[in-house]
Image (tube, rainbow, N blue to C red; front, side, top):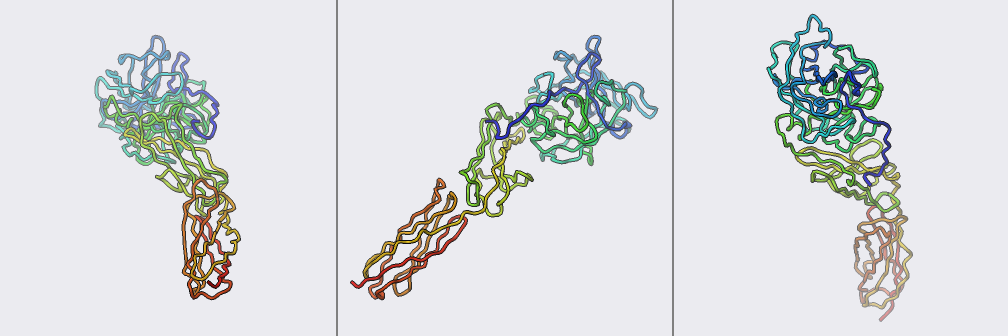
Length: 471
C-alpha cells in the first residue's frame, strides 16, 4: 500500500495560463489591485501562438532573467514555444492600460530553459518551472522594476504568510481586466494541499507546496507568478496549478524554490539532483502488536522511493502533529502517550530535497498493562541444599521488553537472588527459576521469601513459602 489512509480524487487540476483560445485560465480571485511599485518583480508574459495569445505571469530574478512556470513555455496543445514567440512586459500595474505611474519596459525573449524533469500535461505536473533569458537586460534602477531574491533556506515554510502578485483573472470564466492583483496566503503543511487530491502534492512534496486563503484563490493567468514571503519578499515558490473553477478558499499548487533541486536549476544547473519522489511502489507502514498500550513497541518502515534517499522516521501525535520522537524507526510507548493516537512519518532526504510520507494513526493508546505474579508453589528443602523456586510473571496485555524478578529470603535462611530476561514477540509472560543455597544453620520451619517483579511498564510484589527441613 502506498499509505495507510485512502486518497479520493475530487477534481482535475488545471494549469494556470490564460489564453484567448480556450486554454484553462486562472487569476487572483478575491485579491486586491496593486501598483507595480509594491511588487516590482512582477511581469506579464505573452506568448503568440498563431491567432491565440497566451498570458502568464513571471518574476524578475535579475536584469536578464525571468522566472515563470514551465507550462507557460508551451502552447495550448503541448508544443514547446519558440523563444521568439514570447515577450515580457515589466514595470506595469495593468497590461492593457498602464497607469501614469507605471514605467513600462518590453523585452523580447531570446532563451528558454525548462526544468529537465518537466513533462507537459493538461493538469498539474512536477518541476513546472522555467527561466526565460531576455534579449536586452531590464533597467533595474527605478522603483517599478526590481529583482526579487530567491529563498535559499532549505527549511520548509509550514504556516508561513506568503503573497502572490500576478496578472491572472479575477473570476473563473471572465477574462482578466489586465490589472495586477495581490493576495496573501498561508503555506500548507508539507504533504498537505487543503484537502485537494492531486499527483504533485504529496507525491513530489519535496519540490512543491500548496498555499491558500479563505478569502481568495489563484486562477488562470497567475501561472509563473512568484509567491513571496510576506516579510522579506524573497521568492518562496512559483504558481503552477489550482483546482478547476478557482473556488474561493481552494489551495493552489506551487513549485518550491527552497528545494535544492529547484534552486540549483534556477541558478543555472541543467542537471540538478532529483529530490526524492514517491512512486506507485513507495510505502510507509506502522506496525505494532495489538492492543496498542503503554509498554508496546511501534515500528515504522518505508521503501521503494525514487531518488535513493536516506530514510529517517518521526513518530507523531496524530491529532496535533507534535513530534514524539524523531530519528529511530521504533518507538516504545511510555505513559505520557496514554490516550493519544500515533502516526509515523517517513522522511526521505537526498541532495535534491526532503520528502515526507505519513501513515494513518493507531488506535488510542491504552494505559499500562498490570503485572501479576502467579501464586508460587511452596517448596520444601533440607538445610544446606538448593531450593529451586519457580516464579511466573504475567501481564494483562502483551508486553515486550526486559522482565526482572528478585526474591529476598530472611537473612538467616539464604542470600537474595535476582534474574532478568528479555521477552520478545509480546507474549506477556516470563518464567524464572531461582536457586537458593539454604544455610546449614537456617531455622527449621516455614520461611517467607519477598518477591519483587518488574516489566517495562509495571511492578508487582508477592511472597513465596519455603519449608526448611532438617538434614
